[in-house]
Length: 147
Image (tube, rainbow, N blue to C red; front, side, top):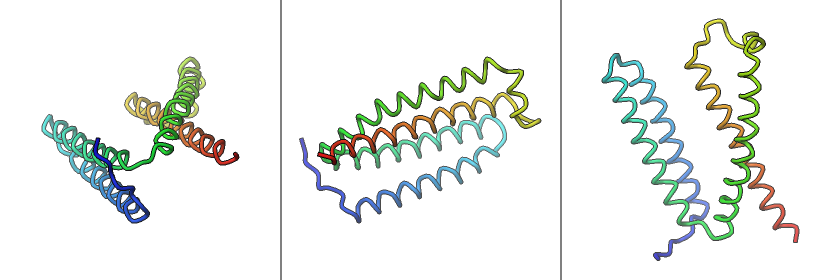
């Protein structure tokens, strides 16, 4: 297996800048392509977003190969335990809200549509997973720093 040089501060800053540019490019490009009418706009938007995600995955693989074993273990542990816990909390919230649809109407804008609700549910699950991941990652490192 090929060994890689650790990132260092400059490499980490470069990776963050590259991911920021990819995110900016993805947001601007998808906003432009989503306004194109018809199937061409739909396919163009999908292909463009897949290409941006593939580039982001390539950067992530490049970063992962440069992590030491402790950092890899912290991320794996946080991904499993924090992401799973966040998914459960998000699922409980969504199930609670969907079984109380009469009360839910109070919290929705008048022009809400099913697509908005699906995206809102997906984003809430993602945010709960990210929050759980962050807490679990910090917990993993704090437990090892104490002794």
